[in-house]
Length: 189
Image (tube, rainbow, N blue to C red; front, top):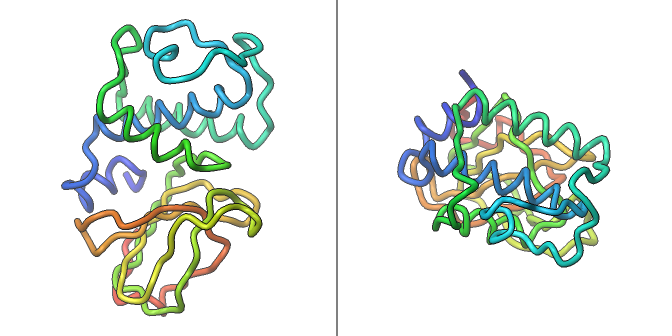
């Protein structure tokens, strides 16, 4: 399987476990619902998201958000994810919430992951959303590496910047810049 779970478990075992994937996906998916006005009723949902401005239990999602939720649910089903919504937040759930809360658009995992080890191109600015007018939240510089398993939005892709295979996470965010294989010492995916 070339999806996120297999990729992260083989390439980045020190930074993301199967449980971490499940928790991050649960948070990303439910953050989309929260931003659309969903009222959470589970103990975990109410602990993680603010119901003070909710509008109901079946908010209308944009077509792009509907597809993102579908993709995430498919990935969670393949991974056998089971997040205990009767319990309180774990450190993994809180970390995922902190990661996604700073974003204007929430990334959704796609089946096709890609990695560029030893990037040699120009510095790329990472944004909080899919637009140049969104805040700059990081960058990819020459010598670093990047991983992307995100379902693209509006010509933008969500990437994670690492020190290298199995290395530390340095930054993450959205970019419209194109990285081709010639800019990488090694390509995976």
